[in-house]
Amino acid sequence: MSPAGRAVPGLFPGAVEAFDRGGMLALVGSLGTQLREGYAAATATPALPSAEGVRSILICGMGGSGIGGDVFRSLYGPTLAVPVVVTKGYSLPGFAGRDTVVIVASFSGNTEESVAAYTAAVERGCRVVAVSAGGALASLAEAEGLPHLRLPDHVPLPRAALGYLAAAPIGIADALGLIPPAADDVERTASLLDDLAGRLGPDGGDPSAKGLAGWLGGRIPVVWGSEGVAEAAALRWKTQTNENGKLPAWASVLPELDHNEIEGWSVGVGTPFALIVLRHPGEHPRVEARVTATLDLLRASGLDARQVHAEGSTPMGWLFSLIMLGDFVTTYEAIGRGVDPTPIPVLSALKERLKP
Image (tube, rainbow, N blue to C red; front, side, top):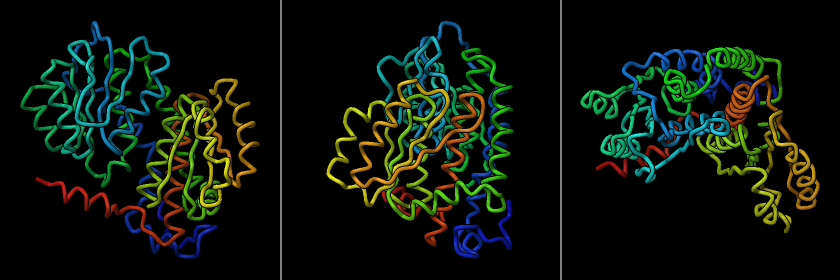
């Protein structure tokens, strides 16, 4: 996916060469490969715990390492016989115990919240699996004799390793027999993403990602997704806007936002904002009516809106196609403003300040 010598339509000539110095476009385009490789590795995780008598699944992780839990919950939470809970912090919910499978993900292995959650899970006797590229989590798992899925360390940032991080709970749950076999769905989705990356990348002919980035034009994105697979996708668009685009953003979920958020647009504050509505074929039948009615009402506020539709034939395909589009949009949006999307100086500065 080398952009050398090619200008991106909608961006000034040479923008990719000048500003994508960290190679983020190539990284987001590798999502299909990551998903395929990550699933294969996760299903082969050694020494996994027994799934007999499991009554809950808990996935712990922060930031780019935590989004894999949101993906898993969106895909499997509605149909599993046991609850799927995602936590993002130092503590575990009260129910977590010996009948809980706990997957703790930290790309570096050193995220302090995740290390604390892992330690608590071990102390409670949970069925713990660590996921990291090394660091303290790997050391703790080795010391305790507990399973550890080692992630590849060639990806420089957690948010750019989503395929590996999302595949981890899918593959682990598959190996434990907690979800239906996912191999065919993973391969179908990975192939879809490979095709989508070719179309949306710098040399591709699909203008949708570049066009959306130009339409946003530095405005603050408001991303709506319907409950289910679009909920995790909306969160990913929001966090990628923050980290890639260096902009504030927020994500909300239909139908809940129809019971509060829409009132906030009634005074015509729409000008600095741009609304993106993520759609997919698995929506509740009433969501389509809600989207139409809600957008009709909000036009008077000056809120500019566009709808984005998922590709694929399964919920996994719908979710990951929406995610990949958002990853490209936020990367192009940064490049179009003359910003390298890869560095995260504010986050890095905070980590330095918090070092013991």
